[in-house]
Length: 105
Image 1 (tube, rainbow, N blue to C red):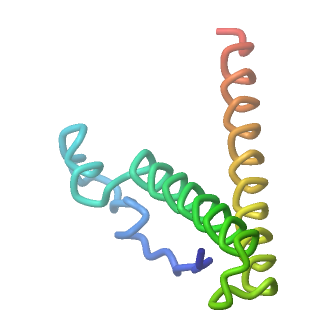
Image 2: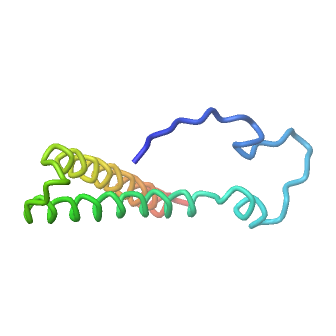
Image 3: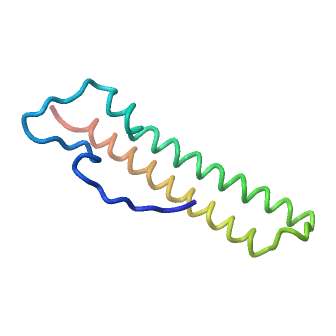
């Protein structure tokens, strides 16, 4: 799992100069993928890391000489870090939802 930080330009962030028309809903999401596709991709990567670590664990247990213990431990740690990050994002989303629902109108 790679962590990349991209610089955000006004056009990439969806910011438009004042007075310009906003496209219909769904156009931005289809063009750039949007939050849901980014979240789905991240969850898919975490799942793949967990599956890979499980596969390597089984290979080490079966004493496969092609798989080292160090490689397996690194894969396990990557999967664990990815899972913890996903858990923190989920907790933040639930907290944000709760805060919004508790706002007085």
